[in-house]
Length: 304
Image (cartoon, rainbow, N blue to C red; front, side, top):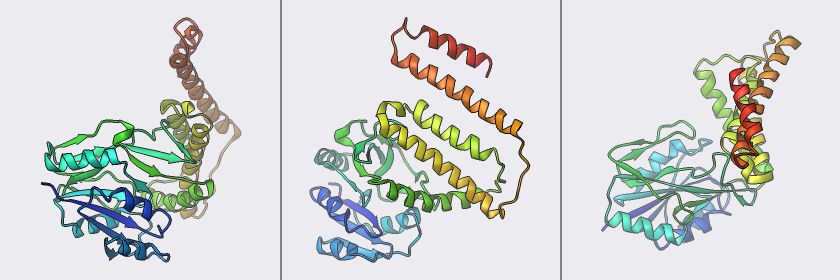
């Protein structure tokens, strides 16, 4: 029989933690909470539910503390959750069965992201597969933000179905998004700087444009309505902030820019947008009604 340790890292999560802990009650043989210097009632809440609580220095993001938390688990299976996540009963039952009769050493679990009060099914937010359930000793994280964990042994994916998905209560407000964006962009800019990236003015056009097109068109964010449009613009905006922070590190060194150069870059963005618009129309229309869009897309590809 597999013993399951649920591992949760926290920082000022008194609002979310009770929901997370309640969702794993039927699954966990133990709960390990590693707190990163919370100033609210997070630690008190964790201890009251019987979780084993440890302290870790505040790092600004979770990856550096994950390995520490996993190291405190005593179960032979580990489920990693964030404090703003919960699991449905159907997933708990599924994981229990896996631990008792495993076929592989680690599993990627789909994640259902609730953003601004709505399950975001597109824009590259679904199925959002993450390695979260594994035999202890087979998975570890490096200390890079949003990094993919390192694995040993065989792995598999759970079905991309809502009943087997972790529920992630992601961004509740624009203010929360902007607060996290500011924190994450600091780290992302530092990674670029360490990697010797030199800021060029074109970054302020090409990087956000590519992010928007990737989210809204390639990721079919348009199928999520206004939520998809807003999120795609916010993700694009975050790219602007990252590269402005790289520029800031370079002491806002001036660069020569002509209107002709700006025009050239913007025309390329318009051309790419037109191609993706035609592609989206082809996917959403019937065969005959999409013929003009197919011709347009072919023309744009030839002249790309």
